[in-house]
Structure formats: C-alpha cells, structure tokens
Image (tube, rainbow over all chains, first blue to last red; front, side):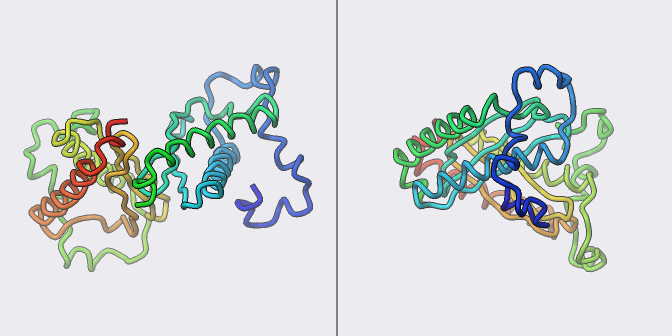
Length: 131
Length: 131
C-alpha cells in the first residue's frame, strides 16, 4: 500500500490504519449491495494485495514474480502471477466491490496458502520458472 | 473479428473489408501522432489479433490457450497467452494507437512466428502446459 502511495498521503499513518480497509466483516459485507461496480480505491487495494503476494513469492524463491490483473468495470476478472514462464497463481475474481477479509489474520492465512501453493509449483517446475 | 461482433455489424462484409484496418502502411503510420491514446475500436482490434493467435495455438497443440491483456489508457501494456500453467507468449506493448501491419502477409508472418515459438515452448514443457 505504501508502494502505491505516490503522493505520500499515508506518510505518518500507522500500518493498522492503512490495512484497516482490507477487513470487511460479515456484518459489513451484508450491508454492501450484491451487485455493484468496484471503485478505483477498491481496485488499487486488490492490486496491492496481489503485489504483496508477488513480493512474498519473489522473496522466498529468489526469482522475479510478476502480477497481472484484468478486472472489468463490473468487478469480474482474473489475476495471475508469473515467475519466468510459469503461472504460479491464477484466480478468477468476482464481485470485487466486496473485496475484503473477515480479519487481518484471515488475510494472512489466505496469503500464506497462496504463497505455499506458488512455491510448490516453482519447486516442481523450476526449469520453467527460471526461463 | 467476427467472434467479437456481438451485434452482427460485419454480417455480409467480406473478410478483406473486416481485415483492412489491420493494415497500417508506413505512410499512414507517419500521419498518426507519436503520442496518443488508443480508442476502444483499436483496443478491440488488438484483442482480436491475440485471440486469433490463441485460437491457432489451441488448434495446433490441442490444449486450451487463454489470452490476457492489460493495456492502460496511454496505450502501454502487456499481453500474454497461457496454456495450462505455461506462459507461451509474453509481449510488452507500447504505442498501441498505431497498431497495424505493413501488409496482411506481414501480419501472417508475425502470427506464424509467434505460433512457432509458442508451440516450441509447449513441446519442451508439455507437462506444465498440461496442468
């Protein structure tokens, strides 16, 4: 999030305040309409999330990980992360206007899962990941 | 191009007329400003081109090929085609408002080259392509 903050609007904010919008509790989610278009802030939050996953993959395996997302104005899309010529994460997104996690620890759990799967794929197909 | 033509605007058009905008000669290109934003028609033409490459890859190797593109409003971006967990084509695009080929045969040549490279990658890493 700080990396995306070109104008330094978050300078001086503690991490908790920057991360707060990533938590959308069940009650909050219930209040968001089922159908809705995601705004730019939500889209950049989703990007930040998958950028972070990429950075974690890169840190663990030592190879460059590149995220790429394609989300249409209705909030449907696809996000993938590549390492070399290997797709290490590939997800279909929907209803991204409701993007968020029950808690920060749930967010961490999901990120850890994605990371573990990605690293397993890199380990299995290291030749393709090194291309 | 016909596949993207949801409203049948091209019904009854011969192939030459539909493909004509893919040809941008040197003279025509010189008349297009160097800096410019691509319009929706140009963007959908670029999509059609890479959709076609994907379809050719799919036809040749018998595995599903999925194109994904990400082009910003300034006409810079990236397009890739995946087969299974393998990236078989990965290109950086720039100045896409000037997208086009010197002639249809040049377009065919370039498509053939991309196809050959993609099929070579699939052949070398068929295990990852089959994931």
